[in-house]
Length: 111
Image (tube, rainbow, N blue to C red):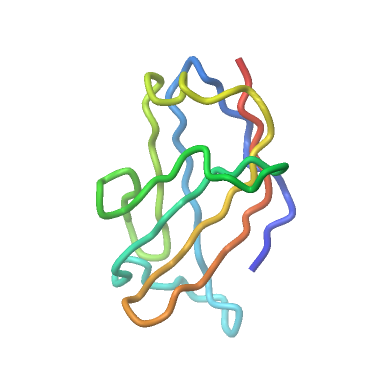
């Protein structure tokens, strides 16, 4: 899956919190992401493809507040370590057997 729209701009001076809804391509129903063994979000430098920040469900960076929805929260103290720039956003969904990659597009991290 690829989402072509960028995520809303985030600032290195404030908390970054977003959520994503996952629906089935077959019938549009919400996918039970709470049954996944891991959800990983990577902010990648688009030039080097190096991961500048990685968030995990297993460490509490990513939560599943309801069916089909996961969200992440990064405190301002952690955001301040990022250089201001555009980043690729890659999400890995792991059910313990298979890892599915979602390329969400870009996010602009600004001052």
